[in-house]
Amino acid sequence: MKNLSTYIKNLNFEYAVSYSGLRGEKFKNLEKINKEKIRNLEKEIESSRFMQKPKLNMKIKELEDEINIYNSRIITGKNEFHQSTKQIRRFEKEEKDLEEIIEILNIEFIEQYAWMCPPIFRDAIVFYSKEREINGILQICFSCSSIKNENEETLEVDHKIFEKLKEKLIQIGHQIENE
Image: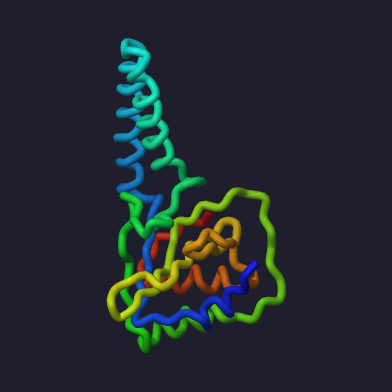
């Protein structure tokens, strides 16, 4: 398991952006639309030919996966954004708020809590190069105190950072509910 502060120290970036997703009105609307599409596809399967069924079942699975908060990411491994993802704030490298976030992320690792709940990664900080290429992604679950990077690796992180990071992200505009 990689250490979060080591990960942060090795990042080469020009600016960062915070994102939020898998929550709010945008996600609720997507759930409603996908569930309706799934019902229609299930009805279509009943009268479809044998050769059509695998394709329809695959489409149902894609729609289900898109609204499954435990398997979805607000940014995928292909650097694509989930439909519910919205940009909250862009930070220049020397900006005070980003420096405070980096300071929080660099808190020395002492103790990590392991909750038994599956993580829901609803918040992210993405680090970009001068050429607007993604150099790093931190996807954050505040309910189970977990952070994953762009390679889906869970990072070793001290439990103390989560309350401070949550406060800071709320301060800059994230709508983080008590999870």
